[in-house]
Image (cartoon, rainbow, N blue to C red; front, side):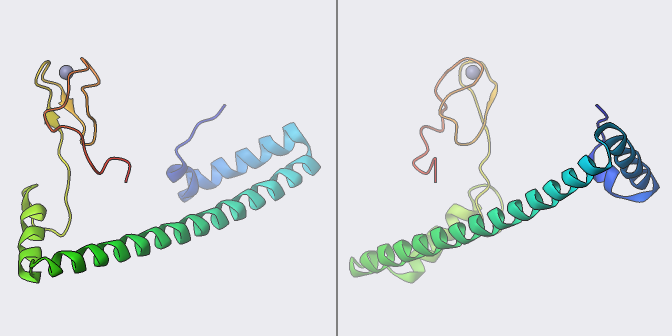
Length: 144
Ligand SMILES: [Zn+2]
């Protein structure tokens, strides 16, 4: 089977040539009626995929809204215990800059395995090569 990176096949003269060849081969092998049916199925699959993407995006927005609601509730409870907005901002800056960059996000970095020296990906509790426990320890946010 012909394998061409999609980015190459979609653009330029080479992409047009590939599409013509694919259409020709499809028509030759499957017959014109079957090719037309396959094109219809392909368009239907693309539409279904787009609809699925919209649904997943809606679910993601709902989850973010729920998380923000929980965070607001937690912060209200902490303020009732005497914590201040300034303390919260200081903690956010400290956590943000822990990866070396104050950029509004945390970028997890791999850690070296204490047993074999291989790098252990962020979020992993053990080394994939030797099974030793990660020095970073378990991640309480894994799976979030
Ligand atoms: Zn290891």
